[in-house]
Amino acid sequence: MKQTFVTCVDIDGNEHEVAIDTLQWRPSAYAIVIRDGHLLVSRQFNGFDLPGGGVDLGELPDAAAIRETKEETGIDVNTPEMVGAHSNFFKLPTHNNDRFVQSILMYYRCSFVGGELSMDGFDEFEKEHGDMPEWLPLAELDTIQLASSFDWRAFVRRAL
Image: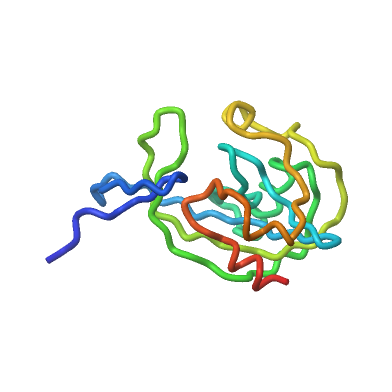
């Protein structure tokens, strides 16, 4: 019998049973940027996430990781190298709170090029729910609160 529902997880770990025909497809790309023993992270929803997000139509995932990093942190990166990927069903943290997606999350190790930490590239939603990005000491990686429905820290360790 064909499955008609899936379980989507939100950033607080809550599970939501969702009809498959209501899901949206949203491939996502994230950057793992390590510099001087620190990891570049975005601050949002009282936690930390890697810079990244949805891949636009016509855009390659590695290019999306570069673009999203600049938009969310002000930092320029290059030479994305895929570290790994994870399939996920999750609830997007949106204003109307009813957007459920099926995604493949792609994680890229990227090289720092330059730039200063900034919120200048934030859209209105990010301004409301985000905070200044930061360089997190890698020693604190296991103790941080994640703002993600998936624990991506294993991919960071793989990128070291």
